[in-house]
Image (cartoon, rainbow, N blue to C red):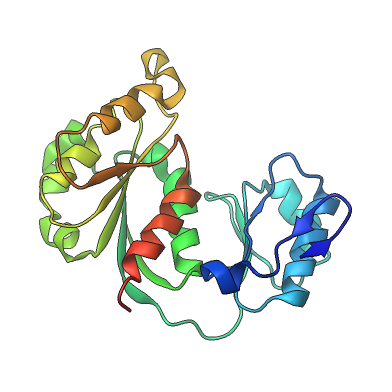
Length: 219
């Protein structure tokens, strides 16, 4: 543990959980984010990840941290260290293009944690032929992260097509009765397809982490 006054940085998390503490940037000042990031770089090994970082924060952080990687869609900042083996096969699927920010957070998280990640975007049930044309792709994955707003039906459809774990992520994308993601959350929780587990609304990071743990079982 490293005491920074405003944060207790968990330096042993890699040993306990296989990946360093991840920085949630929301609610932190740019100075706090950079201090935590630099502490993790100096006192841990492996990749370092920060989530929910906007472009202004990245611009600030890039002045103090060399070679920091930014994904604008995912709102992630990261440092990749060393040569990383990509294990297994995680497929990240979205119902619509508007769901991509949550999907990218999941994909970046899983990739930094040492997984082979592929993407399949904008294949929602409004045009069911789109997902049906990718059956082989769905069945080839070891774990699927399926992200949808609006009515949130896509995870149930995919869950009925594959014999693999499906991690469903509701998004806050949708019109009024979407209730900021509550409508797709309830749809996913009530899925009739076996093998579907549900994350919190817009929680791409949590989905990426869980998919990584499942994907690497037995590796």
